[in-house]
Every structure is written in structure tokens, then in C-alpha cells.
Amino acid sequence: MTASGAGPAPVRGPQADIAAQAQVSEATVSRVLNGRSGVAAGTRQRVLAALDLLGYERPVRLRERSAGLVGLVLPELTNPIFPAFAQVIEQALAGYGYTPVLGTQAPGGATEDELVSQLVEHGVRGIVFLSGLHADLSADPARYAALSGRGVPFVLVNGYNEAVDAPCVSPDDRAAADMAVRHLDQLGHDRIGLALGPGRFVPARRKAEGFTAAVQELRPGQPVHIEHTLYTVEGGHAAAGALLDEGCTGLVCGSDLMALGAVRAARQRGLRVPADVSVVGYDDSALNAFTDPPLTTVRQPVRAMADAAVHALLDPSPGTAARTEFVFQPELVVRGSTAVGTRAKPRPNPHRPPDLPSPGG
Image (cartoon, rainbow, N blue to C red; front, top):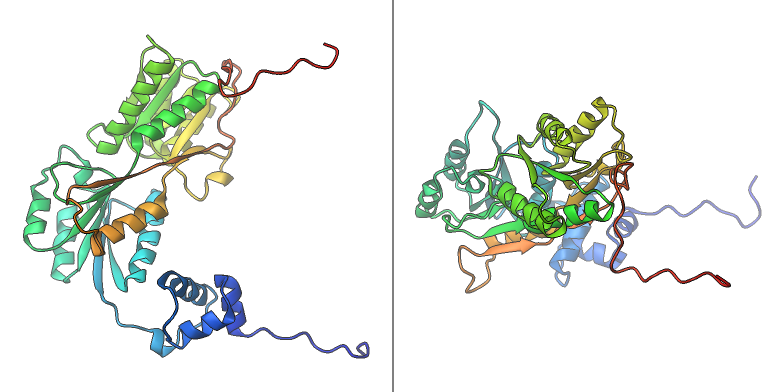
């Protein structure tokens, strides 16, 4: 029996679920699902994303024909930062009505040039290059001039190259290294090392420049400790071993994968992270909060960069020069892999007010 006057709980319909997920009104959901005007593009995209996320099938009227194809060329997918970029670039392209075509390189597999040829044959509207050969200063930039000559617009992400006539979207790599060094310096680490990938890549060179300038400013006369290896766990392990041999207690790494390798190298020597060695990564994978210890890192502004790259490709601002570089500020995310270590002496914070004497003191 049920209590007098009590009835079954009201059942929410699909539109209510979608409205709650998208954080819009049911009326807005109705307008989107019925293909009516008067809904902002960003709001419409949120409703469609909620529809897909909740597993509802899109009405036939919303299954619009793609405005065209856009190529996305990545170096690989094992580093979590590249799938993260691919996902948000795909979302940004969808907002313009375009469908992405993903091309991924792999050792022994298709090269960037081969992927580009295939994309052009498929009639792509443009191409987004993420950490491609444009970032490698030893590579011939003539391939990009040839692509421009075929009438295919493109945009570069991560790795500005003044020899390539195209807009570029980059994080401020110098600032990223600087903030990592200052964080470790504030914790008292007087010998800080940098683990990076090959020095021929633009982001690595810029990080090395920012790191060197910060160390020389904060620790005048101290040697600069930089090790170049690969942007992998194994590369971070090897670089960290060399830096630990040089007495470094604070390690800045060029990627989160390298940072995980650095943590492993420290532990294999019987060192504790962060009690004996502090480690800072770069990128900020979604899994960093769940590593052991949770990884302090410098976060790339992936969504802002992806949106800017797609906008520069499909809707460029009038008067913007082709070689314009759009630089985005990274963010230091402090977690559990950095701390005042047993061999570190914390430095006073110049921005902290002096302690007041205790009453009666």
C-alpha cells in the first residue's frame, strides 16, 4: 500500500535530461531538436554534445551533411596530450560543420609527407599540423611551400617556424620552464635540472632558453643542467639518471611521460618523491591527479589553443599576417610530486607579509 495522496514519481523525458546535461532550458533543447533558429552556435553545440553523451539518437533533420573534410596530422597517439588535442580540435571543427580526417605517424609507418598527399587526394578543406616537421628545425620547410602552392590552407600547432608561411598556435614554452624553475626554487631546491627531448625541436629550444634564463637569474654562477633525450618514459628515466648524478634535487621535464620516467629513476635509486626529489611535468594529462604521487605539471591550454587553430584555419581575422604566432599562457598545477625536500631549504616568499609577534611576545 502507498500513503494516501502519494503517487509515482514523475518520469523525466529525454528533453529534460538533455537540458540538465547541457545546462539550458527545455525550450532551448526543443528549438535545437526541431532545427529552429534563434539559438547561439555555442549553445546549439552544447545541446548536441549532451544528446550524444546521453546516448540519444539525433533526429534525421540534425544529421547535416558535412561542410567538408579537414585533415589533422599528429606525430603519434601514445602521448596523452595528442589524443587530447585531437578531441578538442574535432569538437571545434564540428562547430563549423567540418569532419576531421586523422592522420597519425608511427615509426616505420606513413610519413608526414605521405599522410599529406593522401589528405590532399581526399580533397580536404585544410590541414592542422600538430607538433609536425614544422617544429623540427632540421627538416626542409619547402614541403609546406609546396602545400600552399596546391591551394591547401593549413595551420601549425606547437612549433613556430618563421620559414613556414602559415599561422601558428603555441604555448609560451619559455614561460612554462620559468614557472617550473621558480616553483622548485621557492621550495628550496638549489640545484635544478631539465629533461628535454631533442634540441632540434622548437618547443625544446624555447623551454631550454626559459630554463637557462630563470636559473641564471635565481642562482647566478650555478651551472645549467640540461639533458636531451626522448619525450618518453624511457627518455625521462635516462635524463633523470644523469641529472641525479649531477646532484639535482628538482627535476623539470619536457612532458608528463618524461616526468613519470624521472619518478621511476629516482625510486630505483632509493630516493623518495617528493621527500628527496621533486619532479615537474609538462602538458597535464587527465590522469596526472591519479599517479603516485599526483604529478605537479605545467598545463597546456589545450582547448583555447585548439579553438584558435581551427578559427585561424577556417575563419581567419582580416589583415592577420600568414606567419602570425598566437601564443597562449600555460598554468602551473601543483600536486604531490613537488615539496620541500630533505636536501632543500625553502626560500622566503617575497610576497608574504612578515609574521606578526605573538601577543605578549
